[in-house]
Every structure is written in structure tokens, then in C-alpha cells.
Length: 216
Image (cartoon, rainbow, N blue to C red):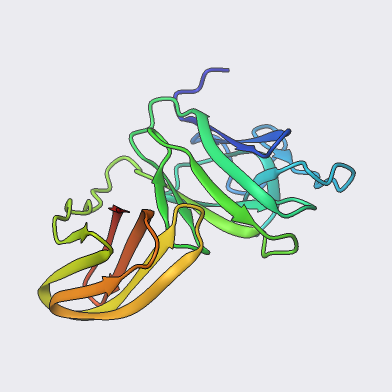
């Protein structure tokens, strides 16, 4: 059925893919209720198969999860073999916001426009992601687009405009932490030895800033 409040998430490995469905329906319960849900059965017979599922509030694993609107739904991932996997959203209905947060790297990806590729290590905690939705009637403060983070040659410049202190984390696009450093009010410089595209995440006591940068 074409529910405009339906999200199809897909995980792709080298050869195999898996889907999970989250749909919002005011008639559905938060837990498994048989009519709007389907259990997720984890299989170990195909070591390369990525397995994607969402959780109910009581941590039941569902392949199809129908519930009233929530701002955040935890999404789990597992595979028997380590590898590189990509999560995308082939169907997003009329949802205004579908933000995938990787709880390991802290990277957030707008699944309305992008997919997210990450490294998975076998045996890792399955509770790896949160998906954030905009629920109707809740105005979330959007991140200001930040010009205070930029790169020149092999140096990342971070200009903290407010009186705050925090930490800058710089990740490769596959989610490996390249470096981290404390940052304070004013101009901060962090050197990166290798060229490439990186995600800079800055956590301060006042805000979280995320910016993609290119080191030449």
C-alpha cells in the first residue's frame, strides 16, 4: 500500500541487500501488534547478507514497523562478515526529514538526498543507527549552515564564534576517526596528513556543527 508516511530503508553489501520498512499510522501500536508489523528473523546462513531492522520501544526487532509518529526510531544492523555497506532510502513518501545518524561515527546523513556508506565489524553492537523524522507540529531548530569550518591545503580551520569550548572530530567518509582535538572560542587549526574528503563534527556545550571538507 502506498502510505505517504512510509519509509523503506535498504542496506547494500557487495552482492546482497536487505530492506526494512518503518511506517507511521495512528491506528498502529508502538509494539508489535500483528496487523501493522512483521518480526525480523536474523539469519546466519548467508555470511555476506546485510540485515537491517528497526526497534520498538521495548527493543523488539521488526522488519516492518508500524507505529504512531515518532521523532526518532532506532535502527539496527548486523552481518556475519565484516565489510563495507551502504544504507539508502528507496522510498520516503512525503516525509520532510529522514536523517540517518550513525551512533559510532556521529555522522548524520540526509537520506532524502544521499546514501551513507560505512564500515561494519562483525560482532559489533547491532544498535548502530537512529533515524530522525520531523514530526508534524514540532519545530526543530535546524543547523545553521556554517562557514566557520573550512580547509586550506592540509589544514582545517575552525572558527568558533561563540564563547564555548568543545571537541572537533574529523572522520573519513567511511567513518574512521582520522583525528580529534579540543577547540576553543576563536580560530582553531588542525593539520591532516592525507588529502581526501572528510567530515568534521564539532561538539560544544552549546551546539553541534557538522561540515564536509576537502583536503587537497
